[in-house]
Image (cartoon, rainbow, N blue to C red; front, side, top):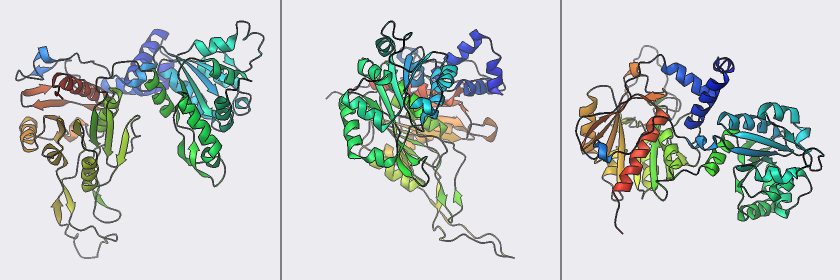
Length: 480
């Protein structure tokens, strides 16, 4: 339905939606869905109420806060991307890559090798890119002004996807006997390679030498991933990175914005924990992990080195983030402590408060005429409190408080008991739709006061919080 709506928009509205989607790092369809969904909810005034003047609530100490998301994908807005498609079964994914790049406001020019044309047609690439597709080096029309040099220079980034084993070898040798290889030899712009081949070819010593040489030459590589191959019964490392992974890598290369948290290390927790009752049942909650993952991504965009410890979620790992997957609270605690020392810890995960004393080794059966079995519970470790009192305590410790009543009172209590610097409190009552939803209304609680934020998309919450974190580190320097 969203795509039909977008198709019927006039050009000005379509461009405005494209730019907004790019700023928020979303597709146009997803941005339209969120906009339409937001129209059904009452939007609070876009202002901040302050109950007590202080470090964060004093306007003189505040940094400007953007109202929109600020994903690295916005770095692609207005950029010219030259996409080189080589001949492999993964060539079909390049068509989706064209669409994803254009959704984020990039102009895409395409060069196809003869091998690529065996898998997809130049007409398909032309239709999706809206630009002429170049295939031949000795083209009477394209080369009247030395077209391969013009293509190599008139772009911000060159992406090769898929990059076959043969093409990587030719690049490493400095070959220039077709249009694609000539462009790669002539370009002065950053080059991003997305290898795709059979696992045996990827693991071959010759391929690894070529990849190492290309890295030494300053080429950037995304993937390959691990999974099933096109060949029956084949699996392993060699799958081309997914289009959205390539887009994220391209955005990082095109992102020239300041990195205020470069050199800082962050630990973030996200999602729920699952505490097993038996092999098929567990104690959990409705946390989706969306807020924690968004914060980890925003920290990485700001230049931080981020370790994300994630409970069981259905979200894709954030790009540029080292993600550790865990199930239980004790596993999460161990992973967080292993990630220390760090400059900051942002504990977003909704950790289960209790676990069963003993997890049954087999599925617990119902017995006719008997009631449910008694579950003896014991308390899980308090990860936020443990970090707040840890010998390697990070300089800035931020906790999240999901509450259904007495939000301010409970958040202030956690601030002291857990030795946190800030508590980000939110109302997770069923009617708010926060758990599992896309939007959040929070209250930032510090020892200097309570700051009310308007209802925001979770990505916007993440970027606003990261701006405050960057400001805190900028104004709380440590003398060495």
